[in-house]
Length: 486
Picture 1: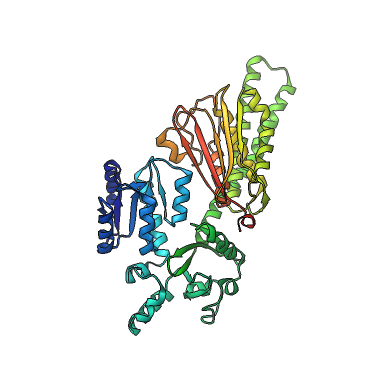
Picture 2: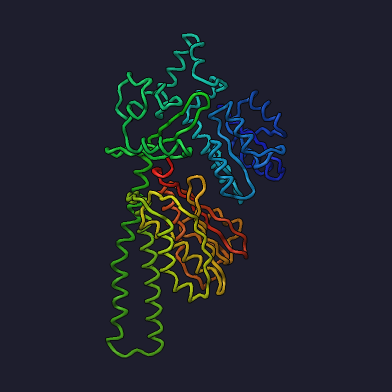
C-alpha cells in the first residue's frame, strides 16, 4: 500500500484544527499537529511533511513569518496560510514570501482538500525528487560535487526524466540545469546551453514576459503558447542560495477539452437567437392583425419581457464562452481611471434615478495596465450595475482605485443586503445567486462569472468581503504595466 502524504497542521484555533483533521483524513491524508514553533521544527526534520498548513498567527508569531523561515530551509515545500478573513495586505505578504496560497472561511471539505491537492501537485511539478531525495537542506548546487559518482548519475537520471519541463537558473538568470522535457518543448539541443543567459537560449515572447514579471512578483500560473497549438502552464519559483526554478506542464489536452465545451455552449446559444428574434418580432405584429383587449395586451407584454430576458441570458452565455475559449487576446496600454470615469458618466442617470450618491477615491499618478479596454469596461459596468441594483434608494456607493506596490486595486462597495457567509465561496459560479436576493431584482447569475473570467484572463484576482445585511465590497487586483514598474 503506497505511503500516504503527511500534512502538518500548525493552528491555534482548536475548532479549525479539528475541521482540517476531519477533512484531510476523509481524503486519506495523514496529519500531524504542531502546538508551537519548536514542534514544527522537530516534525519537519523527522518526517518532512508533504504540506504545512499554518494559521495567520501561530504561537504568537505571524504565520507568514513562520512560513518564510521554513522556506529558507525547504524552498519547494508547499505552505498554506489559514486566515479568518481575506485581505489585500495578507495576500501581498503571502506572494512576497513565496508561499503557496491562502484559505479563508467559509470552508467546506472540498475547499480544504482542493487547495491541499493543488498545492501538492504544484510541489511535485517543481521537482519533488529534489526535496525528498536530498531533503533540500542544502543552500546551493555545490553539494553535487560531494556526491559519489553513482549518486550523481542517479540524480541526473531522475532530473532528466521528469515528465514536466524543468530548468534551474542562477541569480543572474543563466542556465545551470535543464531536463529533456524542456529541451523537447523548445526544440533545443541536448548540450551547449549551460552558463548562458536564458533569454539567449529560449527566445519565446510568453517566456520573456514570465521572467520579467516574476522578478517582481512570483507568479502562480503563466501560460506559454506555441504556434502548433501546444499550451504549457509555467511556474517560476525562487530557490534561496541557488537562483530560480522554472517548471512547465503540458496542458494542451485540457485546453482542447475546454474549447470543446465552450464551442458547444456557443453553438447552442447562437442557435437560440434566431427563434427568439422571430418570437419577439411576431409579438410586435400581433397588434396589427386586429384590436387587442387589455388582457391580451398584458399577455403580449409578458411574452416580450420573457423573450428579452432569455435573449440577455443567451448574449451573456455567448460572451462567457468567448472569454473561456481564449478569444480575449487584445492587449494595449490602458489607464483604468479613465475607463472608470467613462463608466460612471454612463451610469450617472441610473444612480440619479435610484437617488444614490457616489463616493470616489482615485490615487495620484496611477500606472497603466496591459489590458483589453472593451473587457475592462464590461467588468466595470457589471460591478457598478450590481452595486446600483442591490443598494437601496438614498444609499452611497463607495469606489476606490489605488496603487500599491505595482498593483492596481479597485474596490466597489454597496449598501445592499450582503451575501451570507456560507455562500460567499460560490458567488462567482455561473448561474449562482445568493439566497437572500429579493425576487424583484432580476438577473441571470452570469455577471460575476463574466467578471471573474475577465480578471483571470488579465492575470488578476477578485474576491468579495461581505456582511449579511450590511452590504458587500468587491476587490479587483491587476498587475501594473511592466514598462512602468521596471
